[in-house]
Amino acid sequence: MDLLIIEPLEAEVMEWLSARYQVRYAPELAFDPRAFRQALYNVRSTIVRPRIPASHGEGIACRPQKAPASPPATDAVVSVSLP
Image 1 (cartoon, rainbow, N blue to C red):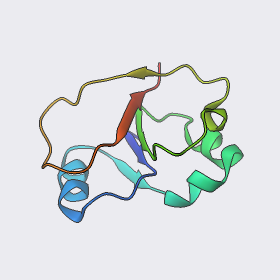
Image 2: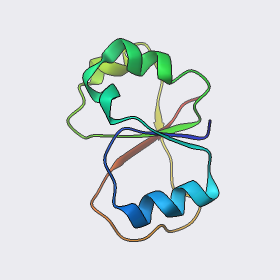
Image 3: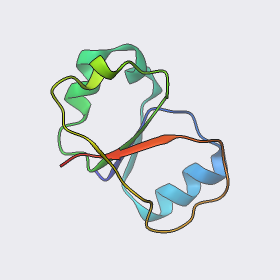
Image 4: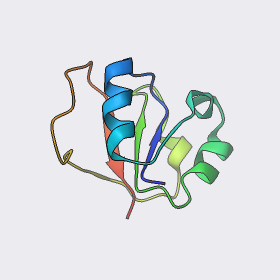
C-alpha cells in the first residue's frame, strides 16, 4: 500500500490521492496504537492527525517528505514516509 490516511480529509483531496496512489482510510487507528503500528507494515507513507501521540509510532523511524505534485488546497496535515 502506498498511503495510509488517519486524518479525515476533504473529499476532493481523497479523490486526488486515490487517483494516484493505493490508499487506505482508517481514522479508527488514531485511537489504537497497537493496530496503528501493525497497519504501518508495508506502507510507504501516512497522513496522521497532529494530535496523535508520538508513542503511537514508538520504535518506527520516520522522516518528512514532500508531495510529488500539488494536491487541492486543504488544512495542514502531517505526512511522513517510512524508511
